[in-house]
Image (cartoon, rainbow, N blue to C red):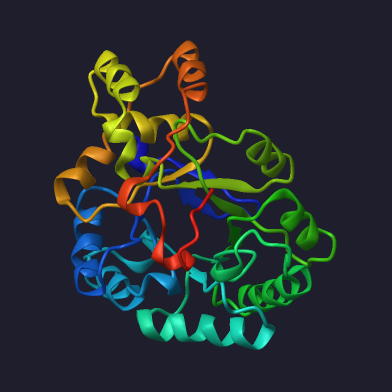
Length: 289
């Protein structure tokens, strides 16, 4: 059963292959979403300082009925925290807000502040300082693993050239019609596990006729096909939903997409619009492309 399967990070820590993303889940609804996910068998919960729901997620973790060590909880240092001091303080604030003694993983949410996402200033020196704060928190036992999100190859190379601890994950936008194979291959070569956020393309994949037809071939929902696709690419899948029925459905992905159909899905025409989510508020109005 996929919900019982895990990957091994570079430091030996086990991370579940499938988890619950909590982006756009309001803080007062986050605790119940976590409890529903845990009841459905999920053990990986992903949040971020920018989501504004760390308090609720922490409450859900503490009240879900499972021992803390049976869950894998991730949060992210805000993209705007680009100094050692700001990052270190934010890690302590996250732990306090969530009511947890440690996090299983903390990652840098973006190589640049969202208002400057993918612009000329790459913040290489600043990211090294933020990474040093993560390394220190890891060595202090506050974090069991550390990583990054939305980092391109040169962003990763910048950290790798002088770090004490290599990034263990890179969480990126990855879904059918949006599969950058070069970056995951580079990560794999460096021992960095890729996590796929928004594997259902912010819901737009559910409206895609070609994806729907392929899902019908396997007798599954389009969402399950999308999740299975990123799993077969060797990544962690992080679909977001607060709907209990969808949470249960997302975990029912114990089937195999044939190699031929994987090639077809990889080559599908790119989804050009994410509808109402095409411009993300958290990214200061910048489309994530």
